[in-house]
Image 1 (tube, chains in turn green, brown):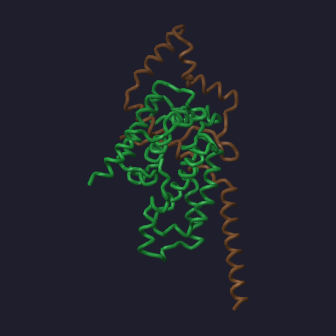
Image 2 (cartoon, rainbow over the protein chains, first blue to last red):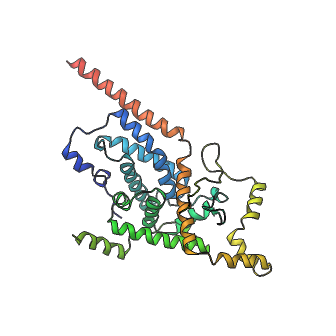
Image 3 (cartoon, rainbow over the protein chains, first blue to last red):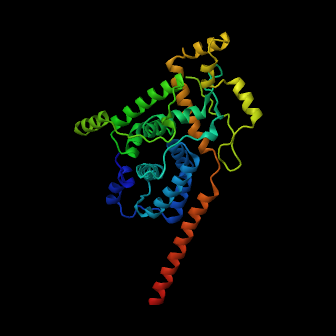
Length: 213
Length: 114
């Protein structure tokens, strides 16, 4: 998995060349960073499946973002910039086995209300557990697009992949999740989850996308 | 496209983390919402449950997709609505203060050298 530089992913380097002065004051930077904390927590929790791990991840992200604040350019997306830092930290920790994604058993009885009265309610635990059944790349994709409301383009920039790859990941993630939720097919993969991510097909799609005009 | 209700039927702990139901409440919830794993164990002894299981297996794909989308957005939104943990705000304040004191130290060093 590519660990993309936040500045590169959010077009900051390009902006940097255009204007050396487009920097936020410390106060404004702190304000914008504070505003992103709820989103970082939501992204981190969906990604790791665990509130405590997610909050550790957010704290690491805040520290790194603060340390790199000179590289953040006013007018670019603080949310996207910090999401890149968070996901890079997460995947780096996963690789170093600092922690493993796991679903949170304390939410086992929590229920997400049904979209329509005639539909069966969805257990949060079922959804979280199902998310842990899919690959890290697919989970990240479906969280960014399906839960966070990012466009495919924005999500692809955050994840450091081609738009086609992002679309493919979201599509496959949805199909798999739908299957799991419809049939209740859970495996032990959701406990101590650790899956490799990029597939050969994705590498091919990436290569084709890069070659395309 | 009907307007979706994003409200969450959930429980929050005092520290903002998700909490658990009391044993009584858990029992009530299980009566209303049979656990999927339990459902398979009940088998054919109860024709009502068998019928229910059969109906569930015929959920149409659009409905599953709608539930999934709704569930993902609800899960994400529920975290957004939690209060910010005090330690994260404290961390930012601490970073800001240490930055401020570092700046004033540098400033005073510059002025004394001049």
